[in-house]
View 1 (cartoon, rainbow, N blue to C red):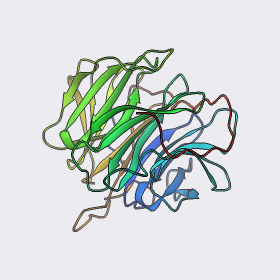
View 2 (spheres, one colour):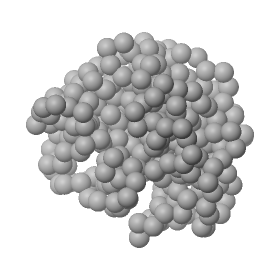
View 3 (cartoon, rainbow, N blue to C red):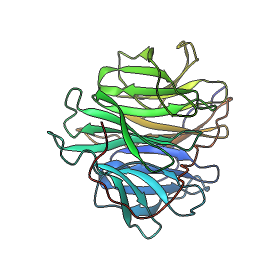
Length: 297
């Protein structure tokens, strides 16, 4: 059984996404405000600001062995975000794009690589890409022609990646080579016609939890794509999900709503019967300052 989602914190976010459980803490972002936030263990406590950036912040992952350092999909690229709020850019591949671009959702996989999507501010058709940061710190574009990439989300063994193209309503599943990180040929996992698939998380049974923007629902699909259950929220735009043990954390957004309701933009929790595992840390062979304007296509 799954309990009904509830919201107890006072915060209301413009575009709450990128929610992750590190194994000790739940962190999330308010993308357009450039804020990195943590959710205190006390369920009624306000969110705590960890960093505020002058650029949009799509998502982060902790950097293994470097407490307080995050790898961040931010602005037009990917950077190391230090505890004092400073950024060391690994690459800014979208600086010279034809349309104004920003980074969107991102996550580390179980092998320590970091994956991040980009999109245009106006969600131009096919303008987005997916990037991979290898343990060497090299940033490579691995997919293009995406309109609004969300996810990626990985199975606990790292062998499969789920990636949503929200504007097209489709979630695809890609096999992932464990050594190289190369993606195999994708298959369509699910197409959603009544809303847009947004943030995702995979539980220990391989069930895929999907925040479905515009519908006020979060849905769990079985590994064969079958819809298993639907959670309903009093917020129209669910945007991100993560599992901390058996608690599902759900972020929502107020952006774009002409008349937001009282719980639009809230962070919700729901107890579920299938737990998740912590979002992996990014593992880099060397963490230092670097600056690069772009990446190989």
